[in-house]
Image (cartoon, rainbow, N blue to C red; front, side, top):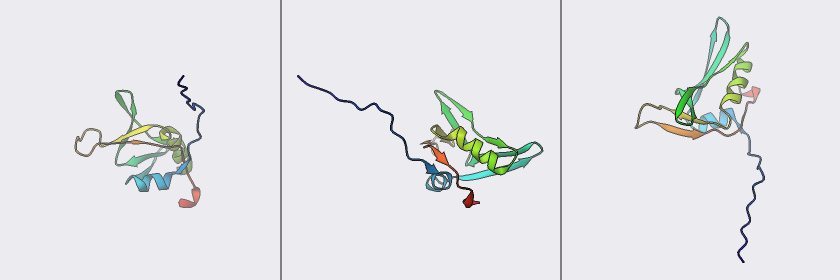
Length: 105
């Protein structure tokens, strides 16, 4: 008799710093101050892949730090698509669980 064993317990993925992830993937973080607070996004422009559609991803907050934390929460664990409409440049990246160290600022 053949026995097949599978380990389906969830494995805690290692958290990766936002700075490390962005540097490794050639990304920059853009923080914009508007009349109602701050917004945060990746440069080049990134969208979240949700099945067969793409969704714009940003972070918002009353402070820069709040916008960054909101952004991290929105992209962690998602697949982001860069340059989605350029067949030659398009990249899809699986985003790990991210964290942000304030000391980077």
